[in-house]
Length: 281
Image (cartoon, rainbow, N blue to C red):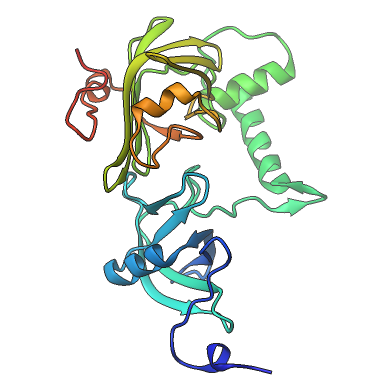
């Protein structure tokens, strides 16, 4: 048995218990699925009003506009809603890669034989093997084994993140930003989170690096984070002392940022929402 929501022409979204709709985003020209995200009422309204895709981040509990930092916005060509109005189909023209990894689509891995990305990984490994034989030499000497040479060649070619990449530079994802200035073991670090409407975080402190492990200290707010060469990842939970750096519902927990540049001068220009330099002198 159907009802007016199922068959009628009136928009009447059926939000779930968390106030969300599933949003499936596809490319207008190719039809490829680019990403799957969620919208609350505010995100849906902003998408309709601006013509650019907005979503609700469940992990960060905030509204975000796709591409606000990277410039890879999703311009909406058409919005559709399914029969029981609990999911939306967002047909877009993408200004750049839809995935935070830099891939055109978030669904770039094919499941083969029970393993995600097996086909793509085979191609990557083959390319890396070719590079190890004819590409430029790795910057540093490595153990004389096939595995070590393969790993070094892949890092040299940029196929996999280099764990020895410099930490200094500018980092961002959406409205979350991090700056690092200094190439010694201990460097200056600044962080800015802006949810809008007087909900933000800002802090300046130090970061000590040991391989892929980072020790961050913003005064009494101290915690460990992870660095993989292309990304800095804060832990899902941070000490209560970190709350003093934030207002409203903003938080440093689970913050993840991607590299924008290795420029010291650019990193030194990062400011808080109140205009304070976070990594500058």
